[in-house]
Image (cartoon, rainbow, N blue to C red):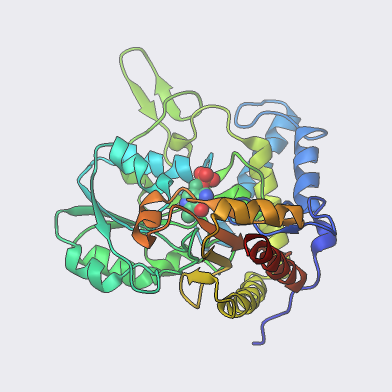
Length: 389
Ligand code: PMP
């Protein structure tokens, strides 16, 4: 079937003004009015706690919270009982790294975000590193050689937040499972850009943050088909079955991992975001961002001063360097032109070291990005070239 084309949705996003070119969606996405409205309603007229109330408002809010879980689960092809609400990808990875009963060797890749490196180190795992291919994708041929039966875990990004490189998750799962390891996928940059069906991917854990998916901050998802095998992580209210001073028993997953009053408003906001994306179709979003990436890469490749990083098939994200100009200077000058990009190490210092640069300039797209944004960036870069002569 033909992929639908995206209509111009910019009017849905109050954070996008006509004279501003927002190219930092990989850091965090702007919110559609539907998400803002859902959170205002949840925090206003409908507000009450969940899971405790004997009064109608709280019972309604509990139903809405669980409906949000179902909506988000359906979006990634999951069973609702396999979806735990967490604060974000960072918390999800910490949860798995800390609560996993066997903290052995974990294979990470050179392009991981710090949030998929540091938790493993802190929780006492032995970290091995998979190299990248020439074009900046995780090298699965090398992964196959590195993996041993000693590996308990493989943890890779589905899409790199710096290079946009997409991973063949099914192949990574095959390699991990062949040696008896589990596979955790950091889906932060993938869920907003590609169709994700966790059942088909064959991984064991899939994590993402709501705020990169056009939803609120403070909410994210840990999906796992092994949640029942994980002991509790944080203790507190709601996660228990029965508490005595002698012995406490715990609720089944996912409740067991949601200690304390959850991010109720944020969960409802994220469900509204998923609904909004589904209306437009993730395939249409993917095609739209692919066209913008192709156009930007082609125009950047024509500039002698520019080095492009990452593969041709980058999903929505383009990193580059300009000879003789620090990325921070690029970012500052572009800002004067009303173009917002990210300049820095993007929480991926090992990758910067591998690329041999202190930082990169990064442009990233969302469903509201358009050719005007690309043109403004290219014009802004011409100004940077003039200033630095
Ligand atoms: N992984 C990737 C690939 C990311 O892009 C990010 C956010 N930059 C994270 C993990 C961490 O997400 P959060 O800060 O929302 O927990």
